[in-house]
Length: 252
Image 1 (cartoon, helix red, strand yellow):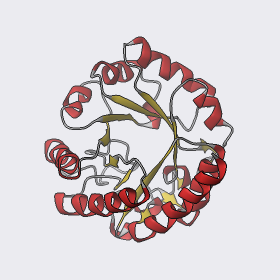
Image 2 (cartoon, one colour; image 1 turned 90 degrees about the vertical axis):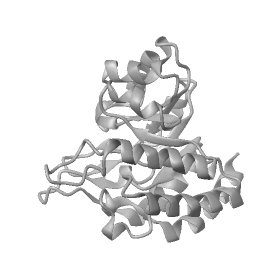
Image 3 (cartoon, one colour; image 1 turned 60 degrees about the vertical axis):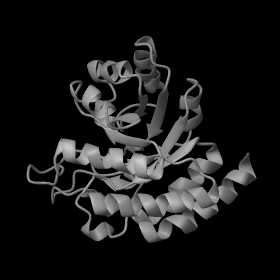
Image 4 (tube, helix red, strand yellow; image 1 turned 120 degrees about the horizontal axis):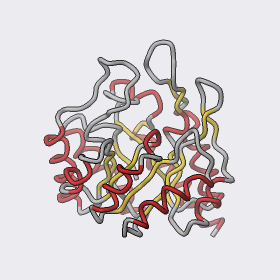
């Protein structure tokens, strides 16, 4: 799963998708385009949240149609599930909301694949209950995504033991290589990050046996409208994926 943090406009979304599709096709990597149609979790009230729900969702739909790839986006409230499901293939539950029963059930009832981000505040084992809620609602198409654990007030750390533990729930497990490097709760009100360690997180996850990776990427992270501090520069993606393919071949 890869793409910009947020949908900023049609042209840049199509440009990012075109580049990633060319890389993943070349390397024979299954690909899901990622983009949030709206950002609900912001530190400051005046932070960028989106270009409009319907406008952004239609861009996601166009990306999927033009490049023949599945798409994924976040939802934040139960009422958004059916709306977003009309445009995308995978509904993503943000980490802070992974315990919200009504939201999980609403996503499950759309029949779409549901990708649940593991809460920074939860153990890997606790995610079994999120999986159970979705499956009990009649949907067995569940993905779990790790994005690190809270470490103090302003940092995260990845516990790779959690990947096989979550795989034991009989669901694919993805490693979020960018959000796991966030430095939240900065005094500036803007989340920091350590994008220079994205490759480290990704290589370790593949070596441990992760089923997939989640990488936010942008051609100009410094000027991205959301989460630029921890996104991978799009120009670096191909080299990273080439190396990761080699790591995966070595461990399977």
